[in-house]
Length: 317
Ligand SMILES: [Zn+2]
Image 1: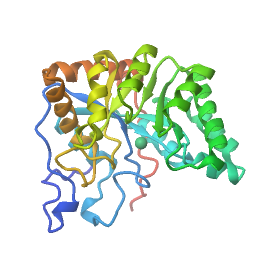
Image 2 (image 1 turned 90 degrees about the horizontal axis):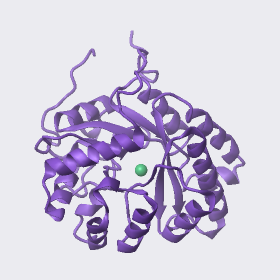
Image 3 (image 1 turned 180 degrees about the vertical axis):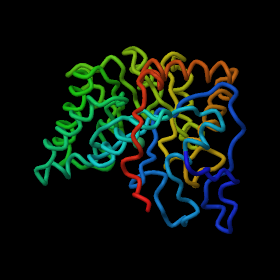
Image 4 (image 1 turned 60 degrees about the horizontal axis):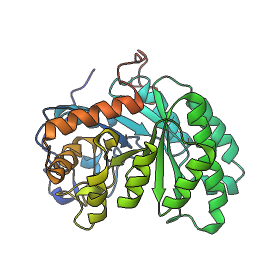
C-alpha cells in the first residue's frame, strides 16, 4: 500500500446532496456485498455529473466497506471489458471475488454485430480463472429489450447457464419483467446447483417458486423503498438459508439516501432495514447472510491472491 485512502466524511462539499452519503454505524457481525459494480467504466469510480469528488477507486470503496462491517464484495462484469477487469482485479484483491457475463441487454447488440459468440467464448475462458466464482449477471430483461432482441437474449442466457454448470460456478440472474420466462428457462435447461436471483424483484409467488427450487434471493436497497411493499411481502416467506444481500452499486441506494450514489459501504442500511422488518436480531441475521454468501460463492480466502500489481494502474514515473 502506498497511499492512504481518503476516509473523511463523503459529500461534505457544496454539492453534498449528490455526493456519497456518510458512513453508517458499523455492523458488529460482518456481511458481504454479493453484487456490486466497482469497475471504473460502469461502476462507482466513474466521474459523473456529481463531480470529481464523487470518484473513488475500488480500493477506497473496499476500505470504506471494511470500516463498517462489509468485509468483501462480488464484483460483477456486464460485458467483455468489465468481465476481464473483474477477473483481473479479483486475482489481486483479497476483498474481491468476481462474476463474469454479458448482460442481457448487451447480448442482442452483440448478436446484431455478429460478435456474441466471440464474447461468450471470452466469458467461458474467464470462468476458469482463479477467484471467478460466479457467472452473472445474465438472464432476461423484457423491460429494456424488445421482441426483436429476445432470441439473442435467451441464447446468451442459456450459454451462460452452461458455462456456470461446466465450471461448477454460481449463477447470478438478472430478471426484469421476465419472471416466468426465467423460471421456464432454468427448468428447461437445468439450473446450476447455486442459483441466485440478484436484486430480487419478485413478489410472494416468485419467492415461493425460488424457495421450492432452492434458489437464492439477493435483496438490494429496493427492499427499503416505500413503494416496494411486494419485496417486503416476499421477504417474509424467504427461508433465512436462501437470503443474500447486495448493493448493485452505483444504483439503488437504500433509504434514507435514495437518489445519491450507492457503494458497498452503504449495505448496513439494507441489512438493518431487513432485520427491523423481520423483527429479528441484526447480528444473527448478518451471521446467517454471511454464511449463506460463503456457501454460494466460496470463501474469500480460499484461493490466494496473486502478488501482481494492479494491471490497470497507470505506470508512474
Ligand atoms: Zn448489477
